[in-house]
Image (cartoon, rainbow, N blue to C red):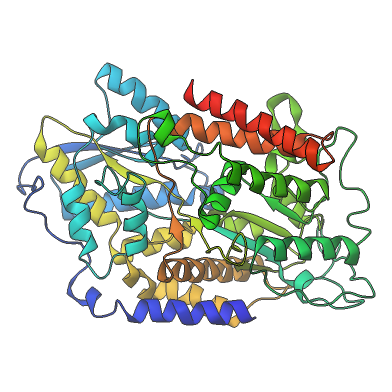
Length: 515
Protein backbone atom coordinates (compact mmCIF):
# COMPACT_ATOMS: atom_id res chain seq x y z
CA UNK A 1 0.00 0.00 0.00
CA UNK A 2 2.04 2.92 -1.31
CA UNK A 3 0.35 5.64 0.71
CA UNK A 4 0.75 3.90 4.04
CA UNK A 5 4.43 3.13 3.56
CA UNK A 6 5.18 6.69 2.44
CA UNK A 7 3.20 8.23 5.29
CA UNK A 8 4.78 5.92 7.83
CA UNK A 9 8.22 7.10 6.73
CA UNK A 10 7.08 10.69 7.16
CA UNK A 11 5.73 9.95 10.62
CA UNK A 12 8.98 8.29 11.67
CA UNK A 13 10.95 11.30 10.45
CA UNK A 14 8.48 13.52 12.29
CA UNK A 15 9.13 11.54 15.50
CA UNK A 16 12.90 11.37 15.11
CA UNK A 17 13.18 15.13 14.78
CA UNK A 18 11.59 15.56 18.19
CA UNK A 19 13.32 12.77 20.11
CA UNK A 20 15.95 14.94 21.78
CA UNK A 21 13.44 17.65 22.57
CA UNK A 22 11.25 15.31 24.56
CA UNK A 23 13.94 13.97 26.89
CA UNK A 24 13.76 16.80 29.37
CA UNK A 25 10.11 16.39 30.40
CA UNK A 26 6.67 16.75 28.98
CA UNK A 27 4.82 19.34 31.01
CA UNK A 28 5.69 22.25 28.72
CA UNK A 29 7.58 25.44 29.42
CA UNK A 30 7.20 27.79 32.37
CA UNK A 31 5.83 31.28 31.75
CA UNK A 32 6.86 33.89 34.28
CA UNK A 33 4.76 36.55 32.55
CA UNK A 34 1.56 34.55 33.03
CA UNK A 35 -0.19 33.73 36.30
CA UNK A 36 1.89 31.23 38.30
CA UNK A 37 0.28 28.71 40.63
CA UNK A 38 1.70 29.24 44.11
CA UNK A 39 1.43 25.55 44.97
CA UNK A 40 -0.70 25.94 48.08
CA UNK A 41 -3.87 27.78 47.10
CA UNK A 42 -6.93 25.56 47.03
CA UNK A 43 -8.95 26.37 43.94
CA UNK A 44 -11.69 24.81 41.85
CA UNK A 45 -11.70 25.22 38.09
CA UNK A 46 -14.42 24.31 35.62
CA UNK A 47 -13.65 22.66 32.28
CA UNK A 48 -16.31 22.54 29.56
CA UNK A 49 -15.81 20.16 26.67
CA UNK A 50 -17.59 18.72 23.65
CA UNK A 51 -17.53 15.12 24.87
CA UNK A 52 -20.60 12.97 25.40
CA UNK A 53 -21.41 11.95 28.97
CA UNK A 54 -22.33 8.31 29.47
CA UNK A 55 -26.02 8.26 30.48
CA UNK A 56 -25.60 4.78 32.03
CA UNK A 57 -22.23 4.95 33.81
CA UNK A 58 -22.82 1.66 35.61
CA UNK A 59 -23.09 -0.26 32.33
CA UNK A 60 -19.52 -1.06 31.24
CA UNK A 61 -20.73 -2.54 27.95
CA UNK A 62 -21.27 0.92 26.47
CA UNK A 63 -18.03 2.51 27.69
CA UNK A 64 -16.47 2.36 24.21
CA UNK A 65 -19.09 4.85 22.99
CA UNK A 66 -17.91 7.44 25.48
CA UNK A 67 -14.14 7.08 25.24
CA UNK A 68 -13.32 10.79 25.50
CA UNK A 69 -15.60 11.25 28.51
CA UNK A 70 -13.94 8.43 30.48
CA UNK A 71 -10.49 9.53 29.38
CA UNK A 72 -11.12 12.98 30.81
CA UNK A 73 -12.42 11.56 34.10
CA UNK A 74 -9.17 9.60 34.40
CA UNK A 75 -7.08 12.66 33.53
CA UNK A 76 -8.83 14.79 36.13
CA UNK A 77 -8.19 12.14 38.79
CA UNK A 78 -4.50 11.91 37.82
CA UNK A 79 -4.19 15.71 37.79
CA UNK A 80 -5.69 15.92 41.27
CA UNK A 81 -3.06 13.46 42.53
CA UNK A 82 -0.29 15.71 41.19
CA UNK A 83 -2.00 18.93 42.31
CA UNK A 84 -4.19 17.95 45.30
CA UNK A 85 -5.28 21.54 45.96
CA UNK A 86 -6.65 22.03 42.43
CA UNK A 87 -10.10 20.54 41.85
CA UNK A 88 -11.47 20.22 38.32
CA UNK A 89 -15.17 20.16 37.62
CA UNK A 90 -16.04 19.07 34.10
CA UNK A 91 -19.18 19.47 32.03
CA UNK A 92 -19.75 17.54 28.81
CA UNK A 93 -21.85 19.32 26.18
CA UNK A 94 -21.53 16.84 23.29
CA UNK A 95 -20.99 19.61 20.69
CA UNK A 96 -19.29 22.99 20.25
CA UNK A 97 -22.47 24.90 19.47
CA UNK A 98 -23.97 23.99 22.85
CA UNK A 99 -20.79 25.14 24.60
CA UNK A 100 -20.92 28.45 22.74
CA UNK A 101 -24.59 29.05 23.52
CA UNK A 102 -24.05 28.38 27.21
CA UNK A 103 -20.94 30.58 27.38
CA UNK A 104 -22.77 33.44 25.66
CA UNK A 105 -25.49 33.17 28.28
CA UNK A 106 -22.85 32.85 31.00
CA UNK A 107 -21.16 36.06 29.85
CA UNK A 108 -24.47 37.84 30.35
CA UNK A 109 -25.03 36.17 33.73
CA UNK A 110 -21.43 36.35 34.96
CA UNK A 111 -21.00 32.59 34.90
CA UNK A 112 -18.25 31.40 32.56
CA UNK A 113 -16.00 28.34 32.86
CA UNK A 114 -12.29 28.58 33.54
CA UNK A 115 -11.42 26.82 30.31
CA UNK A 116 -13.41 25.39 27.43
CA UNK A 117 -12.83 23.59 24.14
CA UNK A 118 -14.21 25.78 21.39
CA UNK A 119 -13.67 27.15 17.89
CA UNK A 120 -12.05 30.44 16.96
CA UNK A 121 -15.34 31.40 15.29
CA UNK A 122 -16.84 31.64 18.76
CA UNK A 123 -13.78 32.70 20.76
CA UNK A 124 -13.20 35.74 18.57
CA UNK A 125 -16.31 37.35 20.05
CA UNK A 126 -15.20 36.64 23.63
CA UNK A 127 -11.84 38.43 23.47
CA UNK A 128 -12.50 40.86 26.33
CA UNK A 129 -13.39 37.93 28.61
CA UNK A 130 -10.41 35.72 27.75
CA UNK A 131 -6.97 35.42 29.32
CA UNK A 132 -4.30 36.78 27.00
CA UNK A 133 -2.30 33.65 26.17
CA UNK A 134 -0.12 35.25 23.48
CA UNK A 135 3.05 34.96 25.59
CA UNK A 136 2.36 31.30 26.26
CA UNK A 137 1.72 30.68 22.57
CA UNK A 138 4.95 32.44 21.64
CA UNK A 139 6.86 30.35 24.19
CA UNK A 140 5.31 27.20 22.72
CA UNK A 141 6.60 28.32 19.31
CA UNK A 142 10.14 27.94 20.72
CA UNK A 143 9.50 24.42 22.00
CA UNK A 144 10.75 22.01 19.30
CA UNK A 145 8.38 19.32 20.52
CA UNK A 146 5.25 21.33 19.65
CA UNK A 147 3.64 20.95 16.23
CA UNK A 148 4.36 24.36 14.68
CA UNK A 149 1.73 24.01 11.95
CA UNK A 150 -0.96 23.73 14.63
CA UNK A 151 0.37 26.84 16.36
CA UNK A 152 0.66 28.78 13.13
CA UNK A 153 -2.88 27.88 12.07
CA UNK A 154 -4.15 28.86 15.54
CA UNK A 155 -2.53 32.28 15.40
CA UNK A 156 -3.25 33.00 11.74
CA UNK A 157 -6.98 32.61 12.19
CA UNK A 158 -6.76 35.78 14.29
CA UNK A 159 -4.72 37.56 11.63
CA UNK A 160 -1.38 36.57 13.16
CA UNK A 161 -1.69 39.28 15.81
CA UNK A 162 -2.26 37.26 18.98
CA UNK A 163 -3.27 33.97 20.55
CA UNK A 164 -6.79 34.17 21.90
CA UNK A 165 -6.86 30.36 22.15
CA UNK A 166 -4.29 27.56 22.20
CA UNK A 167 -4.33 24.34 20.18
CA UNK A 168 -5.70 21.20 21.72
CA UNK A 169 -6.22 17.80 20.09
CA UNK A 170 -6.52 18.18 16.35
CA UNK A 171 -8.16 16.31 13.54
CA UNK A 172 -8.31 17.20 9.89
CA UNK A 173 -9.95 16.08 6.68
CA UNK A 174 -8.89 13.10 4.61
CA UNK A 175 -9.85 11.52 1.33
CA UNK A 176 -11.00 8.10 2.51
CA UNK A 177 -11.17 5.60 -0.33
CA UNK A 178 -12.33 2.02 -0.67
CA UNK A 179 -8.97 0.30 -0.92
CA UNK A 180 -10.35 -2.72 -2.78
CA UNK A 181 -12.27 -0.62 -5.32
CA UNK A 182 -9.12 1.36 -6.09
CA UNK A 183 -6.99 -1.79 -6.46
CA UNK A 184 -9.49 -3.97 -8.35
CA UNK A 185 -9.02 -4.77 -12.02
CA UNK A 186 -11.39 -6.29 -14.57
CA UNK A 187 -13.76 -8.84 -13.08
CA UNK A 188 -12.39 -8.68 -9.53
CA UNK A 189 -14.55 -8.35 -6.46
CA UNK A 190 -13.93 -5.19 -4.47
CA UNK A 191 -13.70 -6.73 -1.01
CA UNK A 192 -15.81 -9.52 0.43
CA UNK A 193 -19.53 -10.06 0.92
CA UNK A 194 -20.25 -9.09 4.52
CA UNK A 195 -23.06 -7.37 6.35
CA UNK A 196 -24.69 -4.84 4.03
CA UNK A 197 -21.59 -4.65 1.84
CA UNK A 198 -22.13 -6.37 -1.53
CA UNK A 199 -18.48 -6.54 -2.74
CA UNK A 200 -19.23 -5.08 -6.17
CA UNK A 201 -17.58 -6.72 -9.16
CA UNK A 202 -15.40 -4.54 -11.39
CA UNK A 203 -16.42 -4.19 -15.02
CA UNK A 204 -14.51 -5.78 -17.88
CA UNK A 205 -12.43 -2.68 -18.61
CA UNK A 206 -11.65 -1.72 -14.99
CA UNK A 207 -8.09 -0.68 -14.23
CA UNK A 208 -6.56 0.22 -10.87
CA UNK A 209 -7.03 3.83 -9.79
CA UNK A 210 -4.14 6.04 -8.70
CA UNK A 211 -4.40 8.50 -5.83
CA UNK A 212 -5.74 11.77 -7.30
CA UNK A 213 -3.42 14.78 -7.28
CA UNK A 214 -6.10 17.35 -8.18
CA UNK A 215 -9.86 17.74 -7.94
CA UNK A 216 -10.09 17.10 -11.68
CA UNK A 217 -8.18 13.83 -11.20
CA UNK A 218 -10.60 12.88 -8.43
CA UNK A 219 -13.58 13.58 -10.70
CA UNK A 220 -12.00 11.50 -13.47
CA UNK A 221 -11.87 8.61 -11.01
CA UNK A 222 -15.49 9.24 -9.98
CA UNK A 223 -16.46 9.16 -13.65
CA UNK A 224 -14.61 5.88 -14.13
CA UNK A 225 -16.37 4.43 -11.08
CA UNK A 226 -19.73 5.08 -12.69
CA UNK A 227 -18.52 3.27 -15.81
CA UNK A 228 -16.70 0.44 -14.00
CA UNK A 229 -19.54 -0.28 -11.55
CA UNK A 230 -22.67 0.49 -13.61
CA UNK A 231 -25.03 -1.52 -11.39
CA UNK A 232 -24.02 0.45 -8.31
CA UNK A 233 -24.75 3.80 -9.94
CA UNK A 234 -27.59 2.83 -12.28
CA UNK A 235 -29.96 4.77 -10.01
CA UNK A 236 -28.34 7.59 -8.06
CA UNK A 237 -31.25 9.58 -6.64
CA UNK A 238 -34.67 8.90 -5.16
CA UNK A 239 -37.95 10.44 -6.32
CA UNK A 240 -37.19 13.62 -4.36
CA UNK A 241 -33.79 14.11 -5.99
CA UNK A 242 -31.67 13.12 -2.99
CA UNK A 243 -28.63 10.95 -3.63
CA UNK A 244 -28.81 7.26 -2.78
CA UNK A 245 -25.55 6.35 -4.57
CA UNK A 246 -22.65 8.61 -5.56
CA UNK A 247 -18.90 8.03 -6.10
CA UNK A 248 -17.73 10.89 -3.84
CA UNK A 249 -19.28 12.56 -0.80
CA UNK A 250 -17.67 15.67 0.67
CA UNK A 251 -19.27 15.53 4.08
CA UNK A 252 -19.32 19.20 5.13
CA UNK A 253 -20.43 21.79 2.54
CA UNK A 254 -18.68 24.81 4.07
CA UNK A 255 -15.42 22.87 4.41
CA UNK A 256 -15.60 21.99 0.73
CA UNK A 257 -15.84 25.70 -0.06
CA UNK A 258 -13.10 26.80 2.36
CA UNK A 259 -10.72 24.05 1.25
CA UNK A 260 -11.11 24.92 -2.43
CA UNK A 261 -10.59 28.62 -1.67
CA UNK A 262 -7.46 27.93 0.41
CA UNK A 263 -6.00 25.50 -2.12
CA UNK A 264 -6.67 27.81 -5.07
CA UNK A 265 -5.54 30.94 -3.21
CA UNK A 266 -8.92 32.64 -3.67
CA UNK A 267 -9.73 35.26 -0.99
CA UNK A 268 -12.86 34.49 1.01
CA UNK A 269 -12.47 35.96 4.52
CA UNK A 270 -10.00 38.07 6.50
CA UNK A 271 -9.53 38.85 10.19
CA UNK A 272 -11.00 42.33 9.80
CA UNK A 273 -14.25 43.52 11.34
CA UNK A 274 -15.71 45.25 8.31
CA UNK A 275 -17.85 43.73 5.61
CA UNK A 276 -15.87 45.26 2.75
CA UNK A 277 -12.47 44.08 4.04
CA UNK A 278 -13.40 40.99 6.04
CA UNK A 279 -16.11 39.25 3.97
CA UNK A 280 -14.44 38.50 0.66
CA UNK A 281 -16.02 35.33 -0.74
CA UNK A 282 -18.43 37.07 -3.15
CA UNK A 283 -15.90 37.32 -5.99
CA UNK A 284 -15.57 36.10 -9.58
CA UNK A 285 -12.89 33.45 -8.90
CA UNK A 286 -14.90 31.89 -6.08
CA UNK A 287 -18.00 31.79 -8.29
CA UNK A 288 -16.03 30.17 -11.11
CA UNK A 289 -14.88 27.41 -8.77
CA UNK A 290 -18.42 26.74 -7.52
CA UNK A 291 -19.71 26.66 -11.11
CA UNK A 292 -17.22 23.87 -11.78
CA UNK A 293 -18.26 22.01 -8.63
CA UNK A 294 -21.90 22.26 -9.72
CA UNK A 295 -21.08 20.80 -13.14
CA UNK A 296 -19.46 17.80 -11.47
CA UNK A 297 -22.44 17.53 -9.15
CA UNK A 298 -24.78 17.54 -12.16
CA UNK A 299 -22.80 14.61 -13.56
CA UNK A 300 -23.56 12.65 -10.41
CA UNK A 301 -19.90 12.57 -9.39
CA UNK A 302 -20.10 14.26 -5.99
CA UNK A 303 -22.44 15.71 -3.41
CA UNK A 304 -22.36 16.86 0.21
CA UNK A 305 -24.03 15.15 3.14
CA UNK A 306 -27.02 17.51 2.99
CA UNK A 307 -27.78 16.13 -0.48
CA UNK A 308 -28.10 12.52 0.75
CA UNK A 309 -31.49 10.89 1.25
CA UNK A 310 -33.35 11.49 4.50
CA UNK A 311 -33.31 8.90 7.24
CA UNK A 312 -35.61 11.06 9.38
CA UNK A 313 -37.09 13.88 7.34
CA UNK A 314 -39.18 15.25 10.20
CA UNK A 315 -36.00 16.03 12.13
CA UNK A 316 -33.91 16.87 9.05
CA UNK A 317 -31.55 13.90 9.41
CA UNK A 318 -29.77 12.81 6.25
CA UNK A 319 -27.99 9.49 5.76
CA UNK A 320 -24.40 9.33 6.98
CA UNK A 321 -21.72 9.17 4.26
CA UNK A 322 -20.24 6.20 6.12
CA UNK A 323 -23.56 4.37 5.74
CA UNK A 324 -23.44 4.64 1.94
CA UNK A 325 -19.78 3.61 2.04
CA UNK A 326 -20.64 0.50 4.09
CA UNK A 327 -23.44 -0.36 1.65
CA UNK A 328 -21.12 -0.13 -1.35
CA UNK A 329 -23.00 2.92 -2.68
CA UNK A 330 -20.06 5.32 -2.31
CA UNK A 331 -16.34 4.68 -2.78
CA UNK A 332 -14.76 8.00 -1.72
CA UNK A 333 -15.50 10.26 1.24
CA UNK A 334 -13.85 13.49 2.31
CA UNK A 335 -14.55 13.93 5.99
CA UNK A 336 -12.90 14.42 9.35
CA UNK A 337 -10.25 11.96 10.46
CA UNK A 338 -12.01 12.05 13.83
CA UNK A 339 -14.32 9.17 12.89
CA UNK A 340 -12.10 6.29 11.82
CA UNK A 341 -14.04 3.90 14.07
CA UNK A 342 -17.09 4.43 11.86
CA UNK A 343 -15.12 3.23 8.83
CA UNK A 344 -14.08 -0.08 10.39
CA UNK A 345 -16.90 -2.00 8.73
CA UNK A 346 -17.06 -5.56 7.48
CA UNK A 347 -16.24 -6.55 3.92
CA UNK A 348 -14.06 -3.63 2.86
CA UNK A 349 -10.84 -1.83 3.76
CA UNK A 350 -10.11 1.90 3.76
CA UNK A 351 -7.10 4.00 2.85
CA UNK A 352 -6.77 7.45 4.44
CA UNK A 353 -5.05 9.69 1.90
CA UNK A 354 -4.28 13.37 1.46
CA UNK A 355 -6.80 15.74 -0.01
CA UNK A 356 -6.14 16.59 -3.64
CA UNK A 357 -5.26 20.17 -4.51
CA UNK A 358 -7.68 22.25 -6.56
CA UNK A 359 -5.60 22.23 -9.75
CA UNK A 360 -2.02 21.67 -10.92
CA UNK A 361 -0.90 25.18 -9.89
CA UNK A 362 -2.56 25.01 -6.45
CA UNK A 363 -1.30 23.71 -3.12
CA UNK A 364 -2.65 20.98 -0.86
CA UNK A 365 -4.63 22.48 2.01
CA UNK A 366 -6.56 20.69 4.74
CA UNK A 367 -8.58 22.34 7.48
CA UNK A 368 -7.19 21.95 10.99
CA UNK A 369 -10.19 20.72 12.94
CA UNK A 370 -10.77 19.85 16.54
CA UNK A 371 -11.38 22.50 19.12
CA UNK A 372 -8.99 25.00 20.60
CA UNK A 373 -8.68 25.80 24.31
CA UNK A 374 -10.02 29.12 25.57
CA UNK A 375 -9.15 30.41 29.05
CA UNK A 376 -11.54 32.82 30.77
CA UNK A 377 -10.48 35.69 32.99
CA UNK A 378 -11.18 35.33 36.69
CA UNK A 379 -10.73 37.68 39.63
CA UNK A 380 -8.76 34.92 41.36
CA UNK A 381 -5.57 34.70 39.28
CA UNK A 382 -4.73 31.38 40.91
CA UNK A 383 -7.67 29.92 39.00
CA UNK A 384 -6.15 31.18 35.76
CA UNK A 385 -2.79 29.69 36.69
CA UNK A 386 -4.41 26.37 37.60
CA UNK A 387 -6.22 26.29 34.27
CA UNK A 388 -2.94 26.68 32.40
CA UNK A 389 -1.42 23.87 34.46
CA UNK A 390 -4.34 21.62 33.60
CA UNK A 391 -3.95 22.45 29.89
CA UNK A 392 -0.27 21.47 30.02
CA UNK A 393 -1.09 18.29 31.93
CA UNK A 394 -3.63 16.91 29.46
CA UNK A 395 -1.32 17.88 26.57
CA UNK A 396 1.53 15.92 28.15
CA UNK A 397 3.22 13.49 25.75
CA UNK A 398 1.83 10.33 27.34
CA UNK A 399 -1.49 11.72 28.51
CA UNK A 400 -2.59 12.95 25.13
CA UNK A 401 -1.41 9.78 23.40
CA UNK A 402 -4.10 7.97 25.39
CA UNK A 403 -6.79 10.32 24.06
CA UNK A 404 -5.44 9.96 20.55
CA UNK A 405 -5.90 6.20 20.67
CA UNK A 406 -9.44 6.55 21.94
CA UNK A 407 -10.66 9.31 19.65
CA UNK A 408 -8.26 9.81 16.68
CA UNK A 409 -7.51 13.36 17.80
CA UNK A 410 -3.86 14.01 17.04
CA UNK A 411 -1.51 15.33 19.76
CA UNK A 412 0.15 18.72 19.55
CA UNK A 413 3.40 17.21 20.89
CA UNK A 414 5.46 15.35 18.29
CA UNK A 415 6.97 13.17 21.01
CA UNK A 416 3.55 11.57 21.61
CA UNK A 417 4.29 9.56 18.48
CA UNK A 418 7.06 7.84 20.44
CA UNK A 419 4.72 6.34 23.03
CA UNK A 420 4.11 2.61 22.90
CA UNK A 421 0.39 3.04 22.30
CA UNK A 422 0.80 5.24 19.23
CA UNK A 423 3.72 3.16 17.95
CA UNK A 424 1.36 0.16 17.95
CA UNK A 425 -1.08 2.02 15.71
CA UNK A 426 1.70 3.19 13.41
CA UNK A 427 2.96 -0.38 13.16
CA UNK A 428 -0.57 -1.59 12.35
CA UNK A 429 -0.84 1.00 9.59
CA UNK A 430 2.52 -0.06 8.17
CA UNK A 431 1.53 -3.74 8.24
CA UNK A 432 -1.71 -2.97 6.43
CA UNK A 433 -5.13 -4.58 6.60
CA UNK A 434 -7.45 -6.40 4.20
CA UNK A 435 -11.21 -6.57 3.84
CA UNK A 436 -11.40 -9.62 6.13
CA UNK A 437 -9.36 -8.04 8.95
CA UNK A 438 -11.21 -7.71 12.23
CA UNK A 439 -12.77 -4.43 13.26
CA UNK A 440 -10.19 -4.13 16.03
CA UNK A 441 -7.36 -4.59 13.54
CA UNK A 442 -8.90 -2.04 11.20
CA UNK A 443 -9.50 0.39 14.04
CA UNK A 444 -5.83 0.27 15.06
CA UNK A 445 -4.56 0.55 11.48
CA UNK A 446 -6.87 3.45 10.68
CA UNK A 447 -5.73 5.27 13.81
CA UNK A 448 -2.15 4.84 12.57
CA UNK A 449 -3.11 6.07 9.11
CA UNK A 450 -4.68 9.16 10.66
CA UNK A 451 -1.55 9.85 12.71
CA UNK A 452 0.60 9.41 9.60
CA UNK A 453 -1.61 11.71 7.60
CA UNK A 454 -1.51 14.48 10.18
CA UNK A 455 2.26 14.16 10.45
CA UNK A 456 2.54 14.54 6.69
CA UNK A 457 0.21 17.55 6.59
CA UNK A 458 2.16 19.18 9.41
CA UNK A 459 5.56 18.46 7.87
CA UNK A 460 4.45 20.20 4.69
CA UNK A 461 2.63 23.11 6.39
CA UNK A 462 -0.62 22.09 4.71
CA UNK A 463 -3.03 22.61 7.62
CA UNK A 464 -5.08 25.79 7.87
CA UNK A 465 -7.73 27.42 10.02
CA UNK A 466 -10.01 29.93 8.34
CA UNK A 467 -9.51 33.55 9.46
CA UNK A 468 -12.18 34.74 11.89
CA UNK A 469 -13.95 38.04 12.41
CA UNK A 470 -17.25 39.18 13.85
CA UNK A 471 -19.07 37.82 10.79
CA UNK A 472 -17.50 34.35 10.92
CA UNK A 473 -20.34 32.42 12.51
CA UNK A 474 -22.90 33.75 10.03
CA UNK A 475 -20.45 33.38 7.16
CA UNK A 476 -19.94 29.70 7.89
CA UNK A 477 -23.67 29.06 7.97
CA UNK A 478 -24.29 31.12 4.83
CA UNK A 479 -21.60 29.33 2.83
CA UNK A 480 -22.95 25.96 3.96
CA UNK A 481 -26.34 26.98 2.59
CA UNK A 482 -24.76 28.29 -0.60
CA UNK A 483 -23.13 24.95 -1.49
CA UNK A 484 -26.12 22.90 -0.37
CA UNK A 485 -28.56 25.00 -2.39
CA UNK A 486 -26.41 25.00 -5.52
CA UNK A 487 -26.04 21.22 -5.37
CA UNK A 488 -29.73 20.69 -4.56
CA UNK A 489 -30.94 22.60 -7.60
CA UNK A 490 -32.11 20.23 -10.34
CA UNK A 491 -33.02 22.80 -12.99
CA UNK A 492 -29.72 24.50 -13.84
CA UNK A 493 -28.15 22.46 -16.66
CA UNK A 494 -26.56 24.81 -19.19
CA UNK A 495 -23.53 26.98 -18.45
CA UNK A 496 -25.63 30.13 -18.38
CA UNK A 497 -28.20 28.57 -16.05
CA UNK A 498 -25.52 27.33 -13.66
CA UNK A 499 -23.77 30.71 -13.66
CA UNK A 500 -27.07 32.48 -12.93
CA UNK A 501 -27.82 30.04 -10.09
CA UNK A 502 -24.37 30.52 -8.57
CA UNK A 503 -24.60 34.33 -8.85
CA UNK A 504 -27.95 34.28 -7.07
CA UNK A 505 -26.80 31.98 -4.25
CA UNK A 506 -23.60 33.99 -3.69
CA UNK A 507 -25.62 37.19 -3.41
CA UNK A 508 -27.98 35.61 -0.88
CA UNK A 509 -25.11 34.14 1.13
CA UNK A 510 -23.26 37.45 1.23
CA UNK A 511 -26.35 39.32 2.38
CA UNK A 512 -27.04 36.70 5.06
CA UNK A 513 -23.48 37.16 6.32
CA UNK A 514 -23.34 40.94 6.55
CA UNK A 515 -26.93 41.65 7.67
